[in-house]
Length: 88
Image (cartoon, rainbow, N blue to C red):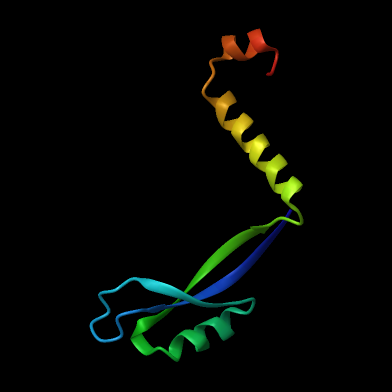
């Protein structure tokens, strides 16, 4: 899995009163480029810093998902329960 940080450009779908939701336009690695791209939409454009996890394969994703599920389940157990299961 790779973690990639970038800047997302969004624009409001209601470009009259700006009451609608914002939708994805594009991603940029350089913040200045993202800001300039958002300026194309005037007050209806904005940027947001995002971090995305990219998996190389389905098995890698499945294993990561399994590990995250185990981690969540273990946090719900008391210390006695974890000791009884010998998991930490």
